Length: 196
Image (cartoon, rainbow, N blue to C red):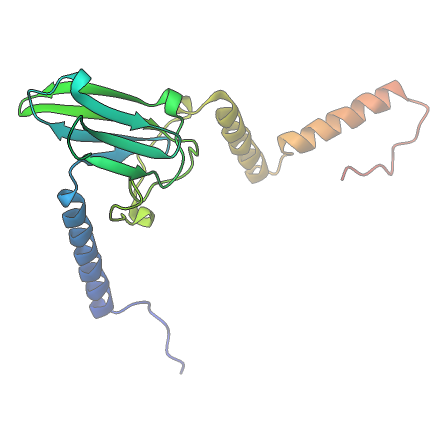
């Protein structure tokens, strides 16, 4: 009798879980060493940079271009200075100086050009995160722009139609065109017409 492959053993699962735990701990430690904190969604990224409580907006040296970021206090070494892993829309990206319970921070909002891509880091010189482990937040159709929403709704409709054995929206459109043509040309024989 042949052995049945039952998948990974308990030991293998435990080893993988331990490796993943160690990888995540290393990643978290690397990120904690950065002089800033950052988060992202598939569409944008947000960076917060702590600065001394005495800093005013005019004291800051902040540059956001399509491919680069520089954040610092004038006359000092920049806190962040590097290239983005992917381009941003600089005109849609913003920064503000905010007061926090522990001082002040520069809050930077980056609008990604490619809204379907996770970033492994904010600047290419920083340690990477494993983007394959990102669990995206759930979103609703109302979060999508009009064109994307229409495309997703059409795909959902077509999927439901297929499951019920009914024509998709494209197939229905072709049948409607053929029917209209038949009505306009009753003298023609459409008995062998095939929609392809």
